[in-house]
Length: 485
Image (tube, rainbow, N blue to C red; front, side):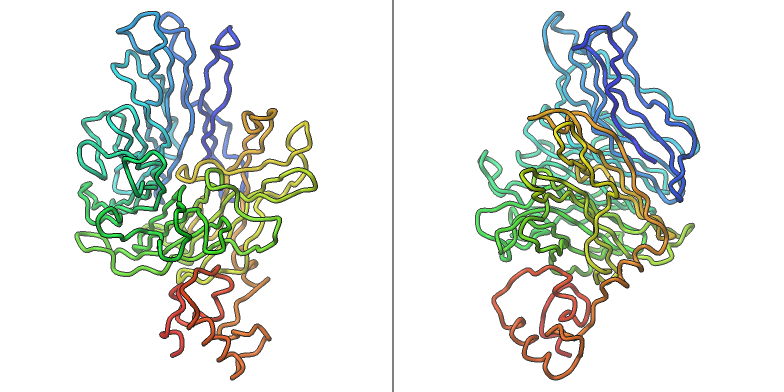
């Protein structure tokens, strides 16, 4: 299922039109399942005639077909205590839950609303145990912080920090397990009180009751999802996304500079059995993107929007290949005098082995703007723009951008790409990893030993996981002495 924002022009005045949300069901083979339908609407003019916007939809579907859509409602005149003023209820996080085959009701903006919420960056979660959750960053309710909750009702909020969150938690990404446990990843400030602070990636685990089980956040411990010892000093890692499956696999993806000072998409695998026990194991962080062309690579950190999806799996609907995962991101390249953007992706086996190399998701490559630019991009990392079905099919939803500079992505079209069952194996067959072939000559023999030793004894570094694959004999996404065995 796809959810997107449309510029509805519901009002007579050009400046007072509303933005609405639509949903569209799509069958696994990519065929549209019925017509699209509205999810939101403006309040009647007799109540409020000014602009009302519904935007930034995030959608999550459980294996059994339970759906949650979370979004931000922005209403310029919903406050009533200051009639005639421009008091802005900016960003009230809303959500609606329904079954895949059901018709959800129409949602309107909160009215009247008592406070300015300033919610941003929503992320939806839904499981087969009946729970639905949303995560978002909150600016208006005290200092900037991350909040999650089953709705915008503050009384139902679950927070990954104290009752007043300290500044510097942003862009939360939410993932749920079919059995009820869930986790949230976010970018967290190294120095919360410093407006020029750098960010690292944090992760928090919750049991099915909403109680915190474990937090990986280095404010006190120095333990982050990213490994700061393998990054340049005074740099930041941002835009996390997270996936969680019924087996207990958790994958976090994010973007930031590597030791080569180039922007990369990173990921890290965790295993958590659930309950009250902490995380049992974790891989080392690894670089996901493998195209090393000098004019090509992930987009700037604020726009790369890496998104991860584990293959959907549950006791009721077991996956054909449980634990596999797929990561997609926005990439930029020089196209003559212009900068082009496209969507790239990489498949991985459950043990972290890359299946082939990164590939282009969007099929069309022609201009998307009147000026001849080619802009194609995924939305924010936490909005679940990639889905990986249990049978092996995958779906990406993205935007081709129009508009005019400087707002070249102000308008555009919504698209989706469906990859068929067997596409991961196809990618793997195009460029398989030959374990042990450290010198890349196509043979595994004594001549590989020195190349392996040289890399093992080199200063700590993060290399892309495709280049690491021949050396990583035990498939733990790290180069250690254990690989020599």
